Length: 104
Image (tube, rainbow, N blue to C red; front, side, top):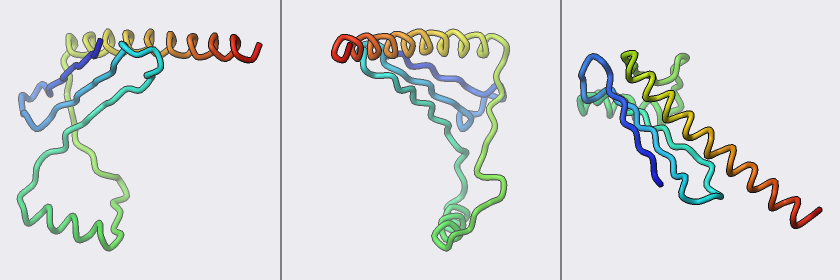
């Protein structure tokens, strides 16, 4: 079953969101997708940033934005990540069992 969890910043801005997704339906799939939406900028700032990127400019701090979570959101994230960890451990155990079956 695909688990999708959207976390919104407590400032209520739709630009500040984190999307967590993983699929435990397939026993070989041990990947987790975490998508972080960066805030939009005016077109001229995006062109300026793109131009600097093309010419190799690297900000010493990287490109970050912030997401503020309330206590209940942190609990939801913990629960989602715990489900993900259980699934990933099951995948690992299945892979190890399959390896031992084929090579043991």
